[in-house]
Length: 306
Ligand code: FAD
Ligand code: EPU
Image (tube, rainbow, N blue to C red; front, side):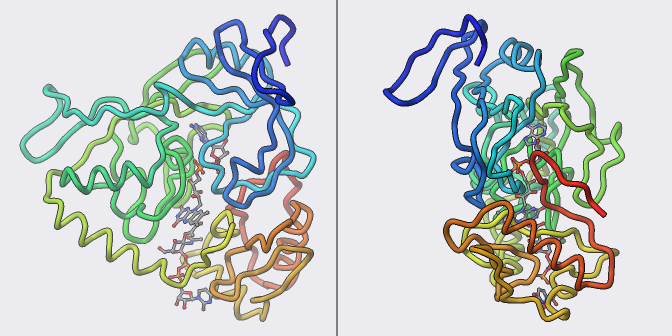
């Protein structure tokens, strides 16, 4: 914790307020991940660009919805930035200069906004563009950074402007400036997606709902337990899940982590799983599946990939 930071907070909790007024707390990261795994780190709840600038003065990582992360049981030594306050708020008011009767360009949507709630809100407004991402438990910033999506649509389908913050400063880019594709945005690591403006097609709530329901059908067979989603990217359009299934690995258990019987590309936490359990399952899959598989999960603090 920073020298000069003022301790405060509940008994037994190490909390402080930094120079920019940012709340800094040493916390178990398991509480921020959908897998429910991860040791402690210093979490910076950043609410402004000034706070981001201060937090970035030392090595840092960016935490979104924690829905694609396998974090070591020992935690990570870097500061972990969590977008909060105004950086987790949304202004969906149509920009009068950029919007037309057929297309809405919104105000700023914070990188810390939870994607599922945003998708539901856009449906109610009858705005089409992000409904293919229904069911992805990310934050907007993490979903942009990964270009999260399904075969029914992806994050970059609905973006107008992306604001990026780095230790060198803040800049705005458009999707055309980036080499984005399947599960990748081309945004360099440690560039914070602080806010975006959305570009959406004017439709009706019923029409958007119908598309959401359709995309949601594809999730019926996915496990409902604690998980970071699909472990591996689909190689060349083939389902990695199908390949892992065909290798006979469904139901393989190491410690308290399990290759889901429902869908072989999902690893689930049976309760009390460790990052080491998950790593061992990933190694097992790589050893048994003949096609080289690229990891979709992100491992913190990192692991050499073959
Ligand atoms: P995190 O997991 O917190 O972080 C992932 C990466 O993004 C890290 O490198 C992190 O540093 C970076 N990051 C996070 N926030 C920011 C930011 N503001 N600025 C810059 N970098 C940032 N993914 C799909 O694509 N399609 C699916 O259908 C899908 N289904 C899923 C279903 C379940 C049940 C679960 C648990 C996951 C699923 N996922 C899916 C995986 C996951 O939701 C996506 O990879 C998502 O993009 C991760 O976003 P996040 O905000 O949770 O990021
Ligand atoms: N299949 C199997 N066995 C399995 C899993 C799948 O045989 O264990 C077969 C299915 O029967 C189907 C085919 O593989 O014929 C495709 O399966 P599915 O529809 O489940 O799609 P997927 O390619 O395995 C992708 C994404 C998911 C996304 C779904 C729905 C990747 C790596 N996965 O899965 O994204 O939710 O489509 O659109 O691209 C994620 O990225 O984390 C994720 C969950």
